Image (cartoon, rainbow, N blue to C red):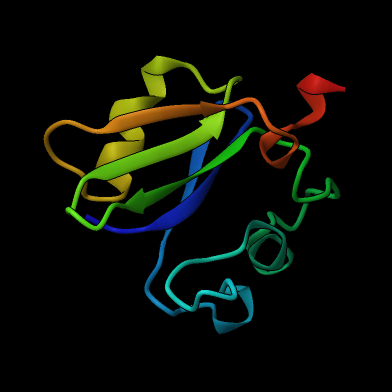
Length: 109
């Protein structure tokens, strides 16, 4: 199982499991990516939207090794299996739809 961040861009998942490939996008913790920093590096060339335009989320692991997915309320359940595959998550996962400003996107404005 891997930590990382993702966006749902025009119905397609853009997933970035943390592997250190983008050091400029690394979060303060040093063990995952920061959405804003990473978007500046991985944003599709034709896209001019800011990092918080599209629905997004992240995968985390608890101290007990349990996978947790935090994500925008605008990402439907049909994407959970795609997210799990992208981050090599097997078995049960805790889903946390985050209603905070942290995961707001254009659909919330």
